[in-house]
Image: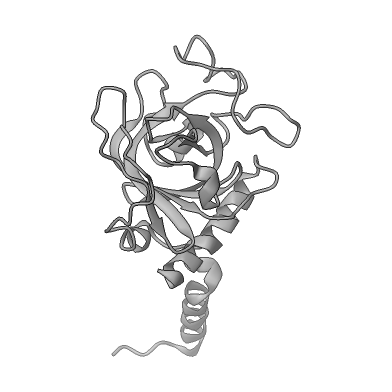
Amino acid sequence: MRKLAPGLFAVSALVASLLASPAAQAAGPSAAQLLAKLTSCSQISSGKYRSDSETSANIPVCGKNGAVWYKADLDIDCDGQRTAKCNESTDPWFQPDTAFHDSKGKPLVADKLPYVVVPSPSGTWDYRKFGIQGGGVVAVIYNGRVDYAVVGDTGPTAIIGEASYASAVNLGINPNPENGGTDGPVHYLYFKNSKVSPIEDHAKATSLGESLAQQFLSQN
């Protein structure tokens, strides 16, 4: 073993100390750590969802301690405030509103804020009865990445698997509302009874999400 000069030893020790510090570590659990807890489904929905209108209904909503989750595709939601990227010209299905609004009472901005679209309440499943609400935190997991989003909009009662333009960008998915998205698999992990305020503060969503994800690992 080659010995280091005293000065080099001190520098090396300092570097090692910094690398071992919490600030140098990944702030939250990895995608692999979270997925390891999502290998089996305890179904909480009365029925199953379709990923698109043409597909069969084969996606259940599953329960875990402190969370609910499902595995689906990811369609692009570009609804909300009009921007250069999200408007009637870029998105044939554009709607100038979202189910939940920002702290100023305005619709969310899909190309700025990572958010998830939850199916509207129905006989299949009612998210409100399971501790899920507007502004709730969701870990969206795809291709080795974890992005912390908020519950920002509601969608069809029979279809599941949709997130905002900004969520797609963060996950490395084509965000084009007309031809983007992915067949997945994308895992959506909702943390019960969580809420980010203001809803548009993505930094808060990430910080809270990392903490809740760590708690999820310890409880499941």
